[in-house]
Length: 496
Ligand code: N01
Image (tube, rainbow, N blue to C red; front, top):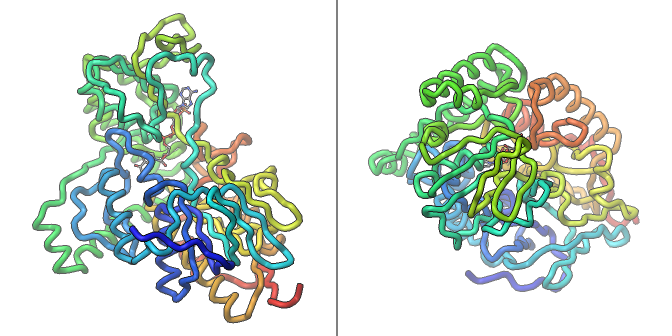
């Protein structure tokens, strides 16, 4: 891959991160004629979360055709739900297809960014030297910074210890005693993938998840050929997958509704069918409402737990010792390998790079009250700065790729407005931002995430959902289609 030359003068647009968000931003910029553009990526390869998460069984829980970029379809997805290698390969192929190489600086970590008010640009520090850009776009993602639990003695463990997001493929698992802490989306993929291989697997469950059937199927060559010959058939499939999910949200999926009860009944049926043992079944029954945490889809998780070489441990962990995990009741599990399937620290992920806005305002401090962004993408005090998949724009029910595309379109509209009106800077008006956040809070307060009786990574320390969009994708797309310039402070060039 030919890499971008290091820019000597301020760029029009600097994008941080080459995952789904950063790549989508870069492609759409190029398609709109903005080519003074650089994407900096700390790793040596594109792919973001799909490059990082290589744990056995890693796959997407949104159908592949719906998870693809709308402007970069792929006819030959091999399954309904694509695995990590196929998605990572797709993102590499898209990078080539749209000629992004000359706009990519791989192996380059951004270490900080400061808004220069006098010059109306961002001064960005990287480990390869400084950069300057009129507009800074974060494509850093929200599920990036692994959460390591504060379990006493964790780092005294003498065997292999690693997080699902940093899987150590050099550690052989065959015949080993393996512990997995956590039962979220990552764990339920890892457990069935490694259970047949390991000697014994102990799964440490703190809270049981709601699990519904996955119905994953291979997509055969005839279907792939049909999609190649008849793109309308592929679009139809994507449309059906999309609208089925939108209907859930429209029918009140984000609240305790009749739909919640129906889905809970389906999940209980799934559990009854797959787990004959009554004691195990009781320990797998979630004590909170479905939808409160991410609803998991799997056909092989429950069967894996019924294997003779798998133990479900539901007691509280007291400590990790050099040779295993000790429970509060004194039970000890001797282990060779301990896997942390303990998720991500959303706040740390979003605020990972110190971003300093106007008057020395640090992003992490601006978020002291609440992690928030106007329409999920911009923040007062941070001119010409946009976040893709920023606060409250994740989804529990549909493909986040669609949210990313709505945000990319919004940023492009801002860039076009800056050019048309010869603006030096654009940022949300504080009053408009406050109004937006008040509306958001009102919608969240009655939601399943706050009323469903659970704790999850969606919430901050005060229990507020800072991660998810409380509506349909269509509603978000509509709100983002045409920015209301009345919500922004627009600073003409030459007025400073
Ligand atoms: O992480 P999680 P994840 N002691 O935060 C437990 C996306 N994703 O990596 O529920 C004991 O959901 C914790 O227990 P509890 C997706 O958006 C997508 O699995 O807090 N246990 C929980 O069980 C997903 O939602 C795909 O009581 C501890 C688990 O660790 C997000 O990533 C695939 C503990 C963490 O679950 C995160 O999923 C995979 C402790 N001290 C992931 N601390 C797709 O398919 C934590 N836990 C697209």
